[in-house]
Length: 322
Image (tube, rainbow, N blue to C red):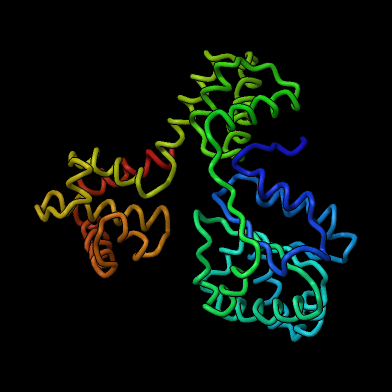
């Protein structure tokens, strides 16, 4: 499919399409929300320019992983030789480096060598604003000293136009009403593609047309699956229903015995099914993580002694494991 150009991404696309190594800024930063084409831009730039210049295309996670393997296997020399001597270094999803202190330090040295040897860097960041504090002041300032270009969130009519072009490219016959609804229910191009592909599979399974009637059936199916997905917010909702406590009370400040017990059950179930950290669970209840640990242990003990409570716990599990 040809590039989809509109007001929200035109500046970034023009820069990528007309990129010349000799004239480009030392660093180009493109940032924006997920699903707006940043990765596609870097791939295009690599195909059009990077391959001819001996460039490297990697994402933040891959760079971190390769660096870690090289450090552990005493292979830092070839790793550094490869990255530090490239003429064009393209790094996607820079946000994946947050918290990786050693990798960020390595990237800083990589930057110094690449730019010092006359090379260039193009990086992308999934964020609403170019906040690079996680890289440290020195590297952040260097990355922000070049060209910084945002990709805005597309308007509904822009997503609608993209959907029309995508459907035409895929030779699909879909009601225009359906296209309009998809445009209103998505915030980016990647989500629009995902919904179209899912709807097509759903309709093919039903041996049906891509009509409004079947789109509503598809959306009901999606809602049903979304509501029973094993996620903390769904577990809280089902636990509240099972314990006959309003969700607002369960996540609120109330310390009534019934509410406390329902909250403990929700915390225990989240920890069991989602296996996320206690600090992460605490965010859903606006409490300290130590409270989550205490609540988990209390419920763990109660379930061994209270048959009625255990039955309710099994009932909640059945919703998500059925």
